[in-house]
Length: 204
Length: 402
Image 1: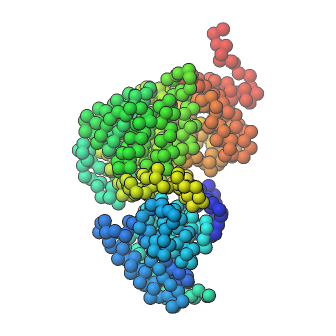
Image 2: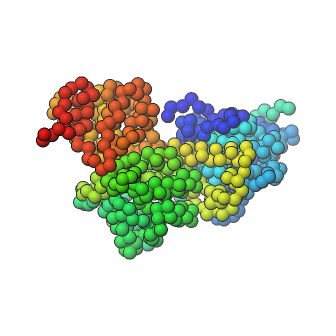
Image 3: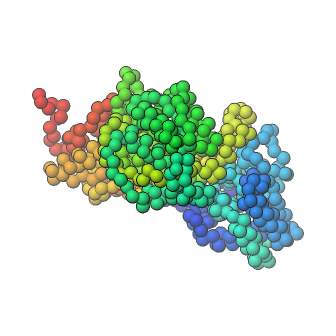
């Protein structure tokens, strides 16, 4: 399917389409995508870092695949994610508030989750709205649940979404990396550091 | 990737785990003269399957029984018979939820009886492979070839491929696992063929070496947690979705469904790579095209040769995958065609309807000829219908011998 569709911040629609159904294709190894367009990974690194630095509430959502040290890689990734978070915190201005909010599991929780301490794939918009998150990164979330969340966020919020995926990437994010490793996450932290001071902070 | 790191090691049957691309494209092939059922067995011998669950229904019973021999020889981890097709498909789900590579076979009324499971498999993102050896489904009972059951599978969220020959069948069983187990796809595959025409006839099939097999399935690449009893999709009947009436539940379920169909779309890239395209085109510039799938394509080729003797050039478009549906490819392949003939082995002409919905100037599509209930489709019938459609007088086959 040829497409003119772009994966952009919402709120997009009552029920937005899955980007894959609109002709957006996932990147091949070594590539990433920005708004559905395939780019080289460095280009996406720069865009992701700029989003973190220009957001009022740049947030990382680590999922169950990195929240528990179920293997050595997961533990290394978790350390890298903490480093990225600390780097963002150091590089933003006092008017910006970096956050690290876990997605510990995927259970539907009723009547609702506590949006101050967690995000849930069935209603991720609650956490985004409550904390006024305007840029976020998913990492360590199973692909199916990440896609659900990313699409719901695009549907109902203005949040800019980034996916650091260990598998093939996510079309439903505005920026997506694939084959994520601890090194790749550290590289993104390096980009944030490198661009510190060169990105205009958000205006009130 | 864990599966790649196992390349070069041996599996439980002593076969060498081989890079799948090398296995399918570079390994030496040996021609063998086999029935389609035997070909299914030989493909599964090399598929490194964990579980096969069987239930007898013609015309897949022979293949299911032959795979039992593979179990006895140590090539399958577990093999058993379910209580019915519904039970089989439910047991397949349980096995796949537990992280196994699963295979099963069914046909006709068996497919229909088990139908509730197929959208469940897709929604749960279970990459089970199911062979469908198509036969009649309606009363009065018929065990003969008929492809009506495929139309019921098209909206389940499963990948649906339609093999023409035993060679397709052999290759696509193995390639099917590679596509359906990709983490961005991770969906069940219904690999269909026309029962008896493919399963019970012999053909020369080029087989890969029996001492080489696919890498095992790696459940850690699954897009959903493996067997997590607290989360959907395994936890289906407690509070999630089904029990709640509110916008959040509806929106989550809607997004879930969209994600299944997004995964079907994502399979496109992998299927194009493994199957060398979703369609195959012969003589793309012909003004008359036969567009079909399964053994109707073979009959179309024979009709093509007959018409060539009369100076009528006809092209062939073989559709390999029905889900994902090759819409762009069909639009491109048919853009110069003035007449599009869609022969089918079913009464409703579901394939012609799909094609009509995909191309401009849909009145170019002639839905037919159709046969069903086990009738063969002589190439002369296709040739006669094409001539009739072109306004050329053709002899009626029904009157032969009178």
